[in-house]
Image (cartoon, rainbow, N blue to C red; front, side, top):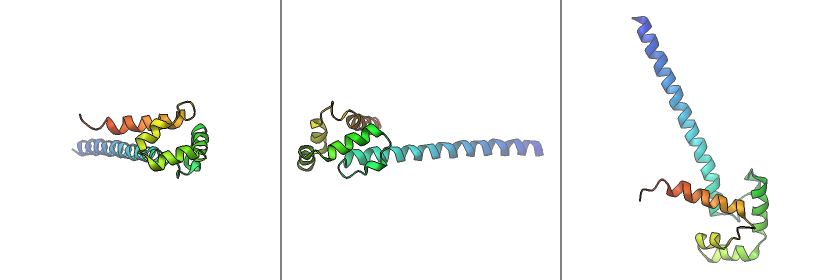
Length: 110
């Protein structure tokens, strides 16, 4: 009888450990998405030091010094701003925007 309770306890402990791991992974992914979203929404105020990708850092620094793009960002919608970015000049930044578009819209049923 005691062995039955012990195996039940072990099974429940494993299940709790598994669920805890899944929850931790979920919140870690949310943190990553938050960084992508902040970069997408506010590229001119984003702290470059928070970006891990060196190429993206360079693109962001270049963008911050681009007065024409800064004016477009301030005067037009965010979608118009991203549509005006040159793919040759900002490939990683545009890739981030496309990543967000996919991760956000894939959860919305049509």
